[in-house]
Length: 444
Image (cartoon, rainbow, N blue to C red; front, side, top):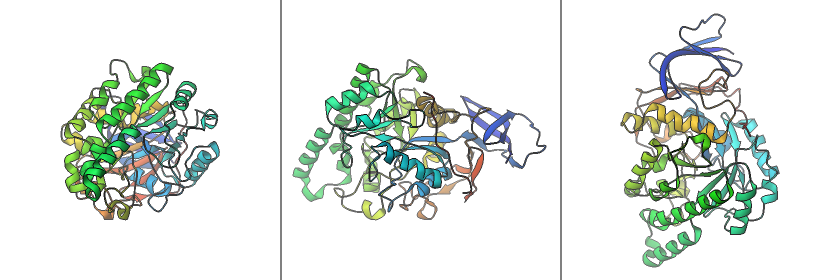
């Protein structure tokens, strides 16, 4: 089906232009002014609206297999496209964890059946699965994930010799969760001794401290520098870690890159008072100074991409005591509008949002023909109205867990339509699920 989007304010590659976009056979076939509508199946009047390349979220946890009481690939991908996220990269800490090629391919197979967004899945690491990792086809898998901090099962990789083998031998991108596990455990014991059963969410950022993050991140960077590894450090949460990253070279020349997440750009430890366990993440939401400096690093290109670390848990799980409540929360439906809210607040430009949520993710991961509004590229597009306010409440949360840390907040902007490979999957609150997303492919 051919679609002509007319009179859109196109945000792409550092510019905003008013033009038309013609979509044919999954691709953007033409961009120009006053394009002919002859023979076109559908015309979309985008006057006054903004057309963005679909966001690519490089870190989500969709909980399938094994944890589908709180989320699954179908529900979370649906939530993603409603929020303007057209592609995602999902993490391996499911049950069982994706630490073999067979288990990894089972996730790809499932996504091909149910995912409304494009998809890729990280291969997980353990202290003993290097042989499996080395079998990866880097043109079909986004990367390898290492938990250099607490995780489920045997996915905590804390054997230095094994880490050196992975960093020296794996050629695909390595994404890491960096928190020093011994330091976190030591802090936890200290606070448990002091507060006993009275531990509260406000203690979380002190237990999972800035020092624990920096110790682990700096160690990972040292390994990458030693072995020339393509290293991507996920969810930076501290100002101190920012000294580890460069902005004096273009992204295409960087081997060590970094990600900021929505919650670390939005919340601070002051919000534990009202949000409690609902903003309990690992790494923890820390101080306002950390939050503000992370934004500065996004703006000056020390941090390369913005993602979510979307990681749903049920309300019942989150309403347990601080010590029992799991870390993580749903964000993929609200990431684009949250950043657009920061645009309204004068904190970031539309062009920079698109750079960090689309262009740079595609460039960093070497994704083929996505992440830009260019002729010949897949038509992964999001049409937004910057002046259509709406309030988040449980009735409009699409994640299976049924809640959001943004509940009660009124966003000024709204996602109107989402296109995945030229298919209009989302339109003013309605879904067309007849076409599924595609497996991302990568240039090697």
